[in-house]
Image (tube, rainbow, N blue to C red; front, side, top):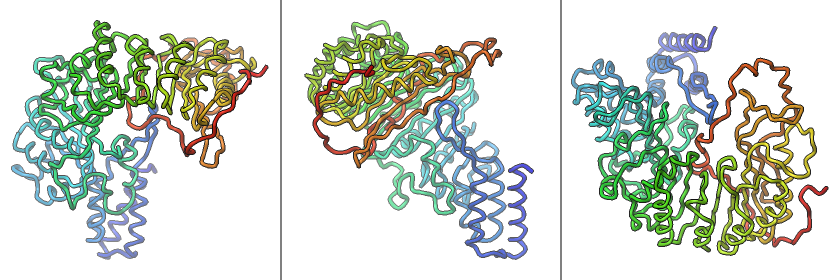
Length: 591
């Protein structure tokens, strides 16, 4: 018997027993344990094959089972109502079924009281949509709203989204707009399966990960206060700090214009802005009608044409900017056709406001917009610096450039740089990295198949073994503050064959691997990250692989490190302070 049938039988038995005895044969706390067990079985958690993120999936029959259980007794009804209404899906049929003119009052009241996740398709009747928006907007615990729109909903969709989105973004609410074969631009091209996600978070950033949304939902108790507290709830209250993340996700490589993002009124002042694949087509004259950057301190741009952004936004609007993160693998996507204009705009901006604390670049040929001499101008204000190209597409920092940055930026606590490809240059390069005496966290960025001295031929996992050579050598070179976290990040990794060659075939892609050393509060060093592979891949034993297409992931893959808030790898269990380093004469590899 499958799980669904088993659960349905258990539910039926409980309902039968409850109906025959009114209050049930067992004490209510026992019934609660049974229901809690069913609750766990009715939900399954699975790992996303791409991102490794835990996603939540609900059995489609679960709502029906819960409604049946509510008939057992008034006690069951009281407890289970919160579960029944945790996720409310509004459909055209439901609107008509409850009442041709209005939502059923009890349904409306329970939705406002209990719903945390709402999903609906706009109805053709404006009166219905007005009431749905009103109900969801008043929700005391709502943390997620999703619109499912179709080509027949053009006018109604724009109306309802415009009417509600602005209020939602003032609260801690995740909003998603999903459409199929639909263009939000009047007269525009129809696109397949595109989504626009608006995620407004508070200081805790609770809404950034789906697993956070659902981690407490198994318990048979009142829903956790993930949204605003019901006792002080005000649907128009403005959060003191707004962190706004906008993702434009598509199945086809087409930019969605900013008109597709249904923001038609000016947003509250944004403290943190994360734009991913957002087509910035505003002008210097009209961007202020939507965006208020007067409090902007943290800016992350992923896949944005920087020329358009930085030539549009005024210098005065970015006066409070303290943290800047940029990522793009496609050179034209980043710079457009006006590299000289972009260089001038960046120089003017950063020349005017030399208070940047964090600069994180994951950009091909980043030196063309942020030359090392310009980075040096940040001086003592800069505490976090990460300079990463794509697969050695750019030129790594020279020893002279490293020395200049070290001399100018004397307060760096975190440093990340590309490791030179030639292994004969590693020794002097790492010795210079070690002389950043204030740094306690260092990242070395490499590409799978990199080489380091001291690794014997015939290794089943050269990437791992070479990282284990680099990490202790880097520590031995460190002056000043002791390292608390140091890491080798290798992208583009493959499994290795017995002959030492990497098998760049479908099925043997390892992606990005991290090898990390940390120091805990006791001062002990421990290694974490990717595990060592202890066996070769004998390609001759898998002849079918020769017939498959080579699959080498492109450089344009999302940089998850920059897409999500708070995913920067930082030292764990950091020890305050640190003893001064001692000069060493150790040689890399020690042969």
